[in-house]
Length: 319
Image (cartoon, rainbow, N blue to C red; front, side, top):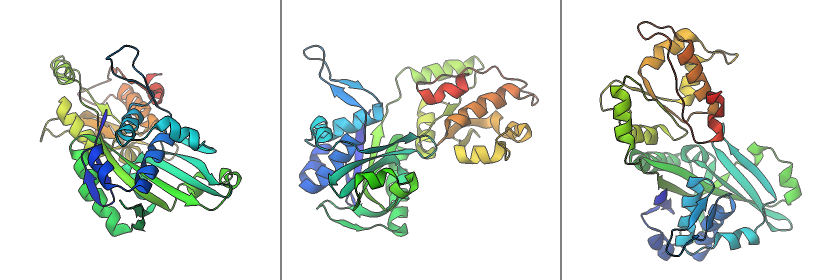
């Protein structure tokens, strides 16, 4: 995975060197600290001469660490200089994660990273290239959503928003705050577009599945525009084929009752044409698999379901 685009200070950058030249030292420090500290990934030296460095941990975070390195930052040094005093681990429900680091004995900095449109909603200001901040209201937020996030997502880039907030309280005080008190009134640092290329063999594998009568469905945490773009590249959907692309929140509202049980009649109206489920939760995957197995809708009948996944959040649907 590679950071392909970065929107910062009302400007777009397609390479780290161009951003490195135009951003002030203060802005680069905030950006690189956010990437380095709010992360558990590592980039290790190559095991053999001439080989590529080894990436361990989340692939998205590895791409960000490489971007920080291209900006001239040493992530290990930044982590050592700012030890984390409080952490909100990534939540599939909230689609974000945060860490708190002390700046002084009585002041802390909060770094938040997550789904672009979700974190952006928590921002009330934005970081400028010269290190200052400016107001960031509904008008500016809508412009970034429509002009930046949508553009990156339409190119099948995974989009993330990085943000921060300085608070004049001690670490001990912040530790007692709720998640909502911590992750609010943020300053948007940047929006990044990260490419996760479709492997060369994937479209042919999808084609072979289709020929064998196997319907492939994609369930992802990416936003709906990114998910649709990737599905088109893979061959999971085709233009104007009537496929249903849906967000997890809409799916849950339609197929689950107040107690979280599947409304099979509603589920059966959706699943035959459903091909992509975006901004999904682990429970959405479980619901989809369970509903497919339980369905007797004519003419499809009960489904034999196979599930693949590469993360712990896939465990519920694999049970």
